[in-house]
Length: 166
Image (tube, rainbow, N blue to C red; front, side, top):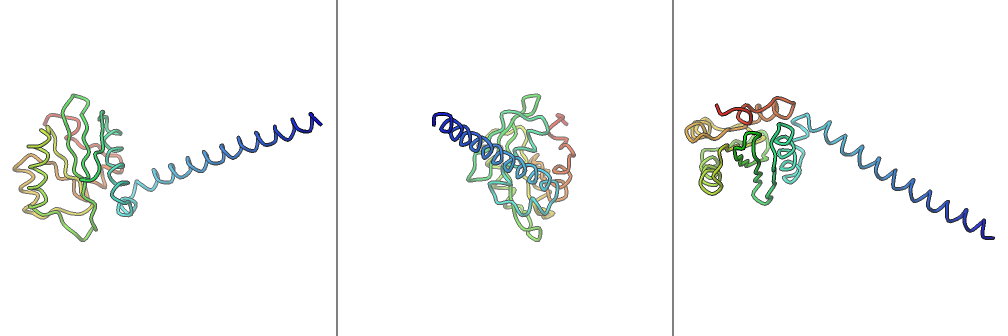
């Protein structure tokens, strides 16, 4: 009888280990699918605000930034470039048909430059910026990461502003 009890106990332990391994494989497959899907704008458009926020933080890390923090709520991300400059990121996930207006840029300028003393201010959007919004961003040294630039960054292109003082 003790031999049978030991075999039953071992069987239960093996089943538990197998289940844990299957759960880990399922998790890794999901992460891999998300990373593969993240290469497309459609995947970015489908992300909820929290997922989009985390993905932008991941892009910053991928490009060499460290001390990346996601504050949540306001869609803010903070990080530091490899040369120590402070980055403040505001992400805006909107439909591709929407636009970022000069009012959106004005709000971000106040937050990034005045409240957080950003060396680099990135306003990242899944939609285009209006002409006035782009002009305002240029005038106040805000990097406007519009839909086209976001797509390039998402597909592996590095944002120059993260890698040079220019």
